[in-house]
Image (cartoon, rainbow, N blue to C red):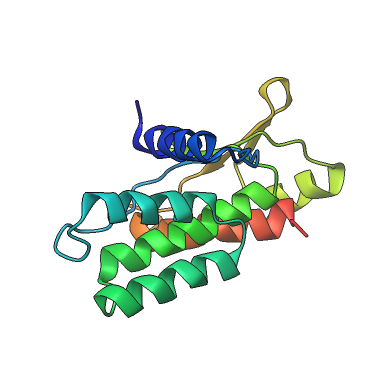
Length: 177
């Protein structure tokens, strides 16, 4: 069982125990190479770490992420870099959810966005801004070549830079409201 699924299952079990109906939210899988986690030395309690992960995975907008950040900072002090990265991933997940995406993952030398159904103007914009991108209508997938640090001999982008780049693709091409 993946961590996100585990956290969701625990949250649903708690809500069922309390008699609350869980609010259905689209699941969004983000699988990009970003060092994003709550270190044990920042939040030592496993229960509190799981609760923070759950709240971040359920965040629907930047305001919800800001609430979690404020609580973490109030309880544990200034967040270290992996926590800041985790907050960026949560913001990205909320944006992807608002764009109707269920998955943003690395696939070979591409970043895959699923499901995607592009209008003609979006296809033109995608090819203009991100040449060599592929749209596979049969599986509702958009594959965008993964950027690198240099055109020749550069290493593929990782971390916050890759997350920022993927965020820009969603706002540039999918244009969520």
